Length: 409
Ligand code: ZN
Ligand code: ZN
Image: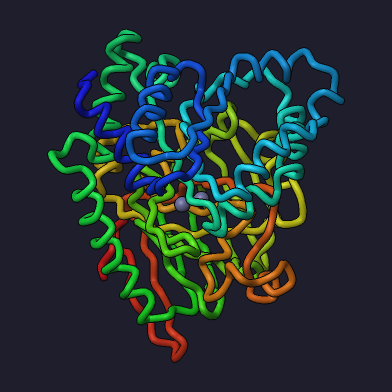
C-alpha cells in the first residue's frame, strides 16, 4: 500500500481524530493483525506531542477460544486490574483510539448468549469509562484498518493480498488520507456538515416521519432542546475532535418514549463477529414491542434484551443515499463504514451531548429529558434509495427533509 498515505492516515487520526495535546496519554486499542499500523501510530503520536502511548492488543481468535471453551465464570468475571486500566486512563484525561477491523463472521459458531454475558459484564464494569466517552469528557476516535479476513469478506472475488490492497485504497479515499492536505480537507468537510446542522438548529423540529418501500414507516419524536451533531465535536476543555473517521452522518437523539411504527433494516449488521440480516423492529411509545430477523435472531434478541434501555432507541442519524461512501456501492460488514453510507438508528444508549446541557445532567434528568440510557449502543442501517423523511415544526408546519434517499434542504 501507499506508504505516504499510510503515514498521512496515522497523522490524521492523531491530529484531527483525537487531536492529541502536548503531554497527553493516548490509549490505542488495536487488533494484533494490524500491529505494524499500531506501531506507526505510536510513532506519529509521540511526534505530535503525546506524553505516553499505551497500546492494548485485541485478538478475536483468542476471544473466540475463550467464548467456546472457558467456564462461564471466566466470561463474567472482570478483574479489578482490567477495570482500573480503563478508568485510570479515562480519569487522567487520556484520548482513546479504537481500530475496528473484526472478521464479520468470526463468532458464527459461538453461542450468542455467552458473548452477551461477557459483553454485559465488561460493560457494567467499565460503565464510567463508556459514559465519559459518550459525554466527550475524553476525546476518542474510531477508525478501521484492513485485516485479511475482513478484506476477503468485502471483496470475495479478489485474492487475499489484492483484497487487502483494495480495502486500503478505499479506506485512504474515504478518510481523505489520499488528499494533498488531509487535515485541511477534514476542516472543509466538517464545515459542510455544520451548514446542515445549522438548518436543523434553526428549525427545532418536533418529529420526523420516515418511510420507504422496504416497509419502514416510523414516526420519531425529537426531545425539546435536542441538538444535531456531525463532523467535529468538542471536549469540555474546548478542544475540537472527530469521533469517527470516516464520518458522513448528522445525528441526534430520538425522544425515548416518542418512537412509533416499524423500521426495516437495509443492510446486514455485524455485531461482535455475528451477522444479523433482514430484520425489522416495531415500536410503541419508544419501546420495541416486536422484532424479527431472517438471520441472527438470537444475537438481535440479546442486544434488545441487554437491559431496560436496550429496547429503546438512542440515536437517529441521517446520511444521504448519494454520498461518498454510499456511492462506492460496497457492503463493508463493518458498522463504522456501513453506518456512514446509510441512514441509521441505534438501539440503546443515547449521546447526552445531543440535548442542551445534557453532559451536565444526572441519570434522572437525562431520563426526564427523553435521553435513553443503556449498557449498549448498536447502530443499524435503514437508509434506501427511496427513503422519504418529513419533519414537523412546533407550529405543525411540514418540512421535506429527505426525498428519494437524499436531503432536499
Ligand atoms: Zn451514527
Ligand atoms: Zn451510533
